[in-house]
Image (cartoon, rainbow, N blue to C red):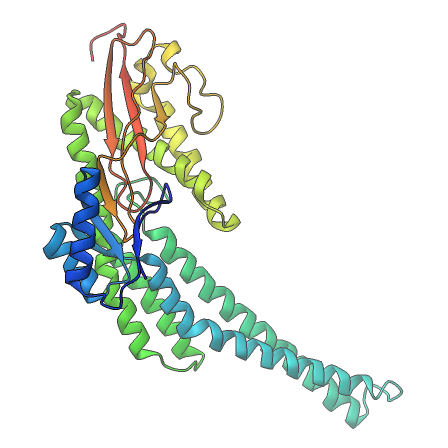
Length: 356
């Protein structure tokens, strides 16, 4: 089964049954569908099969990116089952020790049988606690790995490069390997090698995303000062709000919400934000933004796709046109999604009381 889908919208460009899943088959089907839609592909996310890498790099001339799901799956397959097995064994041993202790309720505490049974219970409890802590540390590394793949840092919303993100990803993978070795879990060298091979491709998302932002800002025709404000103050706010709305895991959502709150504070304190007239900021009554006519920055609904960052599955990007009362100039920007979010953004520049 060959599936070519737009992930954010769920739009299925095509699906076909073919025994031959080579580059030629993919290229023929994709070219036919793209020609019918009158569109092109910016990036393609896949499971990194050779035919799909070739389709991206040679056939479509776009960025080929690994799917983060497969990276996390390989990590989980490497150690999750082994950790769960160790914890189950420790819990079973604790139950056995507790049952043995319960068989001697009448013995005094100093009796040899009771003393040995009590020691066995304590040792088993310590072993259960140990493996629970190992599992918690392992999950923390996986969560940190996931939270590293963003164009901004969680701590202070500083812009990140692909090189910086790749460094963070490698550090977490190395920490997982060290944790496994320290607690004598089975070595998974082949699987970890496969994971490390995917990290540069995952990190490439970040620079690709920023390239899209730069292109859109170039087309927006705004001054360097407003451009810097958009990149460093407005965009982190809009980005983290989108992430909060689309993150299901409660722990990750809480951490992203903290980043959103910090971005909101920084946005409010920025000198250019304070120069905007009150009506431009009307409706900002909580962390983040609700779409409204008078916001200085607002999320707009997705329009029809013009360029498709594909994911054998793909991600469309578009802008909905809007009319806003009382706005002197509207610079419409399309922030390229590149694996995170597809947000149409308008920066409304109104007259202010002093020159900027």
